[in-house]
Amino acid sequence: MSSRRVVIVAAILCSLGATAQGNSISSYFNGARYDFPFTCEDLSEAPPWLERDVDPPLAPRDALRIARKQLDVLVANSDTWRVNEVGLRSACSPDQWYYVIGFLPPPPRPDGGIVTEFRLLVLMNGRTAEPQISAWPTP
Image (cartoon, rainbow, N blue to C red; front, side, top):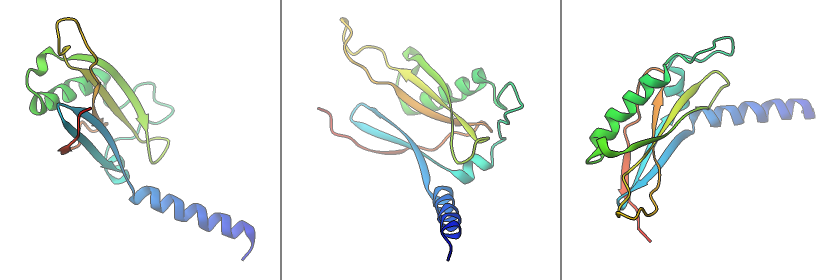
């Protein structure tokens, strides 16, 4: 087999692995780890954001509303949490994008203190990922 064929076969196998492989956004809060898994198939079921399009298929404000609803289900007093990030990321192909929405909980003490961002995932079709929740040791 020529070296060119080896490279082509390897590229095909890598792309098949990436398609089957899952992706995940992880967040940590109150002694728990929240994994929000998604696959390339999930992304392909959502509208693509083509390079010729100025705006993504799902408006950022709509993605924020959807993430806020999911946060309401996952944590108490979510109305006191602040938006920290509304980001776009691509995976699986150049036209497949998703939102990462980050929230900050209120400070744990009156003098502030360190808090970590809680990130949620919103696909371009408005779907969110159901979290897999597990115990996470605190320092």
